[in-house]
Image (tube, rainbow, N blue to C red; front, side, top):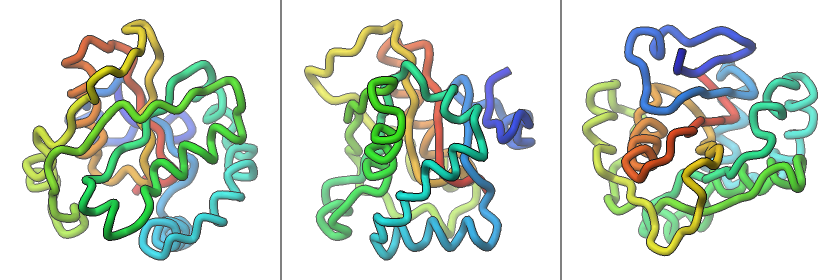
Length: 186
């Protein structure tokens, strides 16, 4: 079954509306603490919070197994948002995961965001899907074997619209093993 799991449980949204990606995993739920972590990382640029990744992964060993032997692809920001924010938190997460897993993963910035979409935070699922439709494109001259295990990396999985749209682009390009991983889920 495709979908997003947390400790072996498939989320109800994925059961009701199967995503384009094959599987997904998260390190923690977006409870009060999880929301604070994401807020500090995404909106305040507190990169040091990612020093806790080894501890989070120790509590969820299946997460490391899920990432092993994969190419991790951070979800890109549009160049205008990247310029304004000054960093891409998904790329920071990918780097922290690479630091923890070493040679077991490779980071490839294979996608680009071609539409400067408004933030998803105030939209419902239907609006989110519409907002990110055709917002991503695979970069030219990226050399990845079609047999590779790809894992899209993002900070949070809420409705899955962004990750699903990224997965659709990779599947359109012929990749079959497209998974997703996030810090938080909620």
